[in-house]
Amino acid sequence: MKNTKISNGETIYLGADHNGFKLKEHLAKHLAKKGHQVIDMGNKKLDLKDDYPDFGKKVAKKVSADKKSLGILLCGSGQGMCIVANKYKNVRAALGWSTGAAKKSRHDDDSNILCLPSWRISDDQAIRIINGWLNTPFSKIARHKRRIKKINVKKN
Image 1: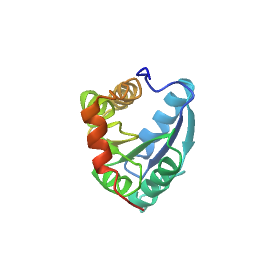
Image 2: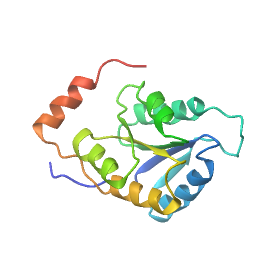
Image 3: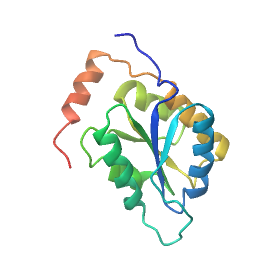
Image 4: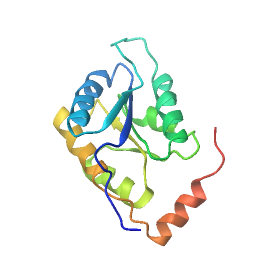
């Protein structure tokens, strides 16, 4: 099978707490313009008392159930969302603190959820990071496949 990048029209689930809310709104518009089906799993309004696990779980459950979909999660550091998402079967969430890190997570680890640190990146950086992530195919190299198989243990 030929390596391919993520195609336009891909379903992408978005989720963010109050720290990532504004950036999520910006990214949703960008992704929709690129032709992706964007499904906002919340929060739908800015709520300074919300909790990141609530939105991380919603996105991770969707990506876990639909292996063709992707997710993007945002919180202050990105770490909390990554921890939550990686509790779910078939989810490989990665912290995308740079374009290079995001691209490596796709190429080597076939990540299907990108977690972004909204405290540390600008709107423009976030767009470069997600574009790099979406345009990088999984390598399908035998050692990468073997490693992914080893981490696919039973989860929620």
